[in-house]
Length: 273
Image (cartoon, rainbow, N blue to C red; front, side, top):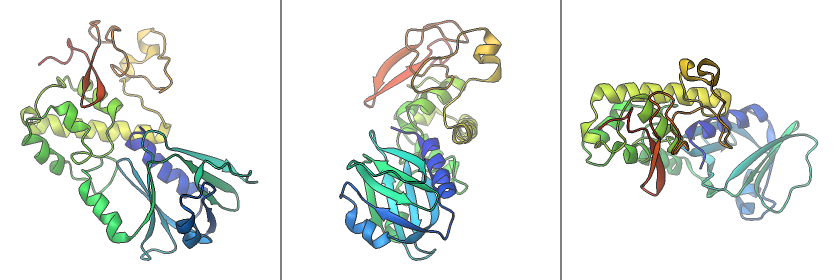
């Protein structure tokens, strides 16, 4: 499932593909979004917004309250292309077409037309997103500091903090030397503020580069004289999907375990209880 930086990057890419005020053709070749597409057809995309793993496309004009809510889930994909526009396949849930570009959405968990109050309700149930200017890290810490749940599980809880996925979870805990099984109530405010700032910086870099890199300059392949990571997720990391391999820092073996139905990765040597 894409992490939050990918969704913010998509919001940026949609906005760049379709300048505000330009009427778009809105279609649903697959048919599952046809009624909503017909309502939006030949209206402009005025705003793109992202919160955690949720993408919002605002149509018409500001204040009209017509939003397409998209959650990619595990299988959703977005494809951008230039004009001329090729014929769509019948797997395309939503196609937006402008004068110079088109965008196809396939296989999302959610693609729904919602109102402004419905959009606000989604924001309200999500935790703060490190990539949003309105985010309040203190709100996340209030939930964390009262919980006996592990910090690794809390970081994946979108009601606590929105946008963090399995990669950023594993990597930020390693970068701060925190045992993933430590209870949230045992995380100090100082530790949380440092993790939040780090997440915000790493995720902003992820938006810029469209990939996740978490190693510090002194630990890059060039600096350490080691081979670069070869993985379909791309990016240089410390522990994510490096189970049974030596830690870049201490040389100990990276471990993995199941936690909340996701694979957890950590270094027992660098992340001591």
